[in-house]
Every structure is written in structure tokens, then in C-alpha cells.
Image (cartoon, rainbow, N blue to C red; front, side, top):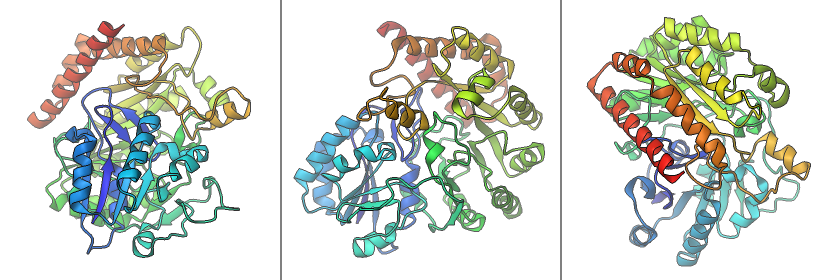
Length: 460
């Protein structure tokens, strides 16, 4: 048996290979890196997920499960947000189960500075859930993949973390979605309380210097393999899918073939994804709509696009963002804009961000607090200049956990109130709901969002 483990921690924490955060509302993503890795486990091996976050399990219960199940391998997700707490867990896990092999994933691994410390307990590190030969390790306890860091292998001359490189096509097989389908996983834009998560691409073709994806090599799966996976998901009764790609639609030819295949097969699936406006013109958006897409999440980040271009390597204009949003609205595609409070230090930046979110007539807006993220070019530069301690993990960009700038947290909460608590917005949001299940998803997300806002005012 192979067990995927999400250790105890803050409620609604997500631990991913590239990003980690605490939910700003009720939502909690499925562990999509685990989903991808499950595709490489041999059919004769049983797979189990123990998620202490959604189940509120403590370590005592988890350890009893490990004793009872006697796994041949455990794969554990950790986070930069609560790195010290997760390190204590790894240390205790190794002390209690010295003969159980375990591998570790998590966004903290984007910094090779932390590798040796983690390998003091773990047998290996997994850096990429698509481009990695996990099957080889399961069969013979070794892997030659650059994205697998083996505790027992001499790493002399080995790349620290794979550099940005030529786009690479990979195959992982079909993930075991049945293991991960659980109503307690919530996606904020899903139209049903049952959804699945699918990955076609790992890595991002863009290189915004404040983003952890900027240095991650791009690998993608053939549209044929993804179509097979979607067909299986559909047979499991899932009607809503979230594509986890940091920029859906790349490479373009592969994405077009995927969308055309979804239409041709008549898959009964609605879906959402992250999208960069530079990849999705109006004709591409029409194809997305025809294949079942209902919501696109796009990074807008700040209202000063000249600053984003010159300072952070983010090459996009306000007019391109506005055209993208208008095209989406014309096609009845919903848009969520992501913003970063504190990225721009100008006094007027906050008001400009909120005003832009309203001006674009966004269906949703996600306001995050600027954090020097592990793996980002910004962090690398600050460390080289001696302005940042490389031993400090990043904090929660959602602003609900860790040592954060209270001023930025207050501004973030103010932005949420200014955007979401407008009577006109609430009225239009209700009118846009298509089903009772979607109404319940939206109602529950809004209720927790308001609860968190009230709590933050009390804490302040």
C-alpha cells in the first residue's frame, strides 16, 4: 500500500509543490500533485489518502493508521507557511517509523537551501508531479529523474533545481481520481459540490519575477491522455472540473486539440481554469466556451502595468486585460481577477487596484498580500543582495496565517469589503446563478468570507 499524507495543520491549508496558502473563505483544493502522482502507482498497489486537514485528524490518529496499514511507501506534503511545524512532524514521523520509506513534496522544495534539512528525515524529494519517474522508485527504490532528489544518491554536479528549459511533453498515465473525490474539498467557482482536478501542464511559459512558477520548467501532457482522463472522471459522476495549469492553453496546438476532443466526445463537463489573456484570443475563448468552460481566473496583480513591466517582468497592458474581460463577458464566461496588495508601494496603489477591479466588472476578485515567495526571482535577487534571509520561508499570501504585515492585512480586508459588499454586485451575483447546487456553493463561500472579515475586525 502507498499512502498520501497531508499532515495536521491550520484549517483549510493547501500544500502544493509550487504554492501553499490558507483559504480566504470555505474553499479547499484537492491535492492535485497527489492526484498526478497517483497515476504512476502500479495497478496492483492499493492507494490511500489521509488528509488530516479536511478530516481534522491529529497525529495520534494518523500514527495509528500507519501502524495498522503498514504502507510500503508514504508521500507527505509540507508547506513553507508552517515549515517549522511540518519539520517537527517529519522528525517525529521518522522516529516513530524508522523502517517506513517516505518522500516529501511541497513548495518549500523550490529552494534547494532547505533540501538537506528535509533529507535528514525523508528518503527523497519530489519536485514535479508530471515530469518525474515515481514508478521507477516504487519498483527499485531509485529514480534518475532530475525532479527526484534521492537521499542516498551522490548529488555532486547535479543541478540544484532544474532551470527553465525547452517545453517538454510527458506522459503520466491516468490518475486514480476515485481516491480523491470528496465533498469536503471545495472549489469556489465550481457549480457542484462534487468536482475533480485535472492537470494538463506543469510550469508556466511566463516569468513574472514575484511568482513561484517563474523558474519552474514547463512540461505538458498530450491531449489524448488528458481526454482519456476526463472520460474516466465523467464516468465517476463528476460534472465539474478545475484545470490546475498555471496558464491554460499552452502549448496552443495541444490545448486546441484537447478542447476540440472534449466537444467531439460530448463530455458532460463544466470547467474552470487559470488563464493568461496573452494566450487566449476571442476565437480561443469561443472554443473554451463550447467545450464547457464557465470561469477563468487571471492574474491582474496591480493597476500600474508600467511598474509591473519594468520592475517585475510582467508584460501585459490594461487594454489587453480590459479586452480579455470584455470578450469573456460577451461569451458569458465569468472572470476572477487576482490582485496583490503591497506589490506596489505607492500610496495610491490600493485605491487604484480596487477601482480597477470594479471598472473591469469582474465577477470575482481575489485580493492577496504580497509575500516574498519561495522559488521566486524576487526572493533570489533579495538574497543575493543580502536583503533577505534565505532561511526564512514565505508567509501566507491570503493573510490569515503566519507573520504578516498587519497594515497590508487590513487593506486586503478593506478591498474585499469594497468589492464584494456592494448591493449592486450582490444582486448581479444572485441573478447569475444557474442552479441550486451553485447557489449553495456561492452562499457558503460568501458566508465564510463575511465571517472571516468580521473576525479580522475583532482581532484588530
